[in-house]
Image 1: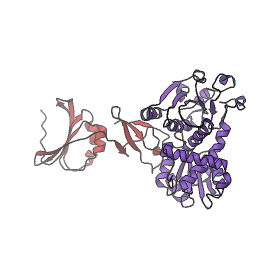
Image 2 (image 1 turned 90 degrees about the vertical axis):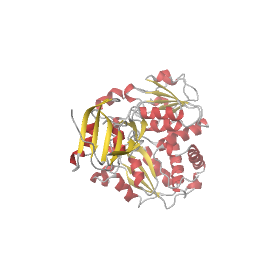
Image 3 (image 1 turned 180 degrees about the horizontal axis):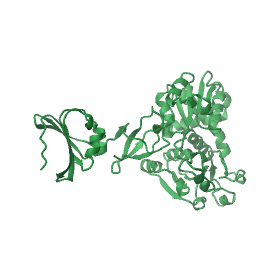
Image 4 (image 1 turned 90 degrees about the horizontal axis):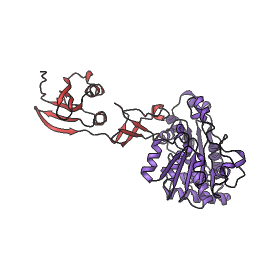
Length: 142
Length: 308
């Protein structure tokens, strides 16, 4: 049985859909930090069958927009003195700036450094966003 | 109606009341042009045309000159600093020090919006790629208003390149805001109107949209037939263009049973999609439409400059 110690102070990103843990790990650049971090993959879960978990032994700023985009079902637990002091849910962001590109090759945001791609959510089920520059739809893919 | 300092990037940047104010002034400008010949004295229009244009650029220039203003700018991106790699935002920030209002045409979709984010003077979208062409829509609406009396309860057929045709994108978005409008979209499957526009007008305005590949299916039941050109410049490969270029050609024979008060419109230039024999038909209004484009652009600029 794999054992991972609990953390005294830090953040636990829980209920990550199995397979998304590594992607979040990469997006958060956790391989480059100098404090202890743990990525658990395929952990048995009642709700999900299998899930991934990330434990970070430090309190860092987390980009909730990015996490919501990758997996809106994850939960975040803030730990202090070995106890959960705060639970947070992320959700699919209504507006996103600069986190992904517009699918339309003719869009100015793909061709001008000043045009940071910006989107508004139009379809939650299909994770479909409307580009603020060209109005075209882009489906976010992790 | 105070529109001073506003940009016109998307046709929906103006409310229906504001559109009406633009049309009313345009009608008066056509009737009594002398009243307005010094309205923009001392004002300068910058024309930033990164893509070729005849009608839009010249009608803007004519509009400003008819109001006593001046013009500067470029008609070809290859002769400007753009060729040296200057970004749109830098160009507009320099040009807004030289002018009072700017019109920009650009092959990249959203480029005028980007320019407006950096401009201290009103920016008008003169057409951006296959996206929007709001001042053509103003021209189209003024044509309908002048020739039909009002914009209401009309069945409108849009025919041709509905995928890349920016004029029809702006037109359907704007006409959908008026009462009792319905649309027939006629195009080959490869050139259907993008779903982002159809979904937008259907969800926002609950308009009826019928799609067909056959012009003959609807030609006898519409109040307006809006023809468009299959645009060679929007295709990434010539083979696809050649396959589709002759999809729809309007002839006298095809309109023989159409409504006697139907308007045949076209943003121009045409290639072969309207046979020359149709020009004499009283329902063909595309040259009148082009003329109205000058007055509506005069009115628009006068509003945005705040000189009326």
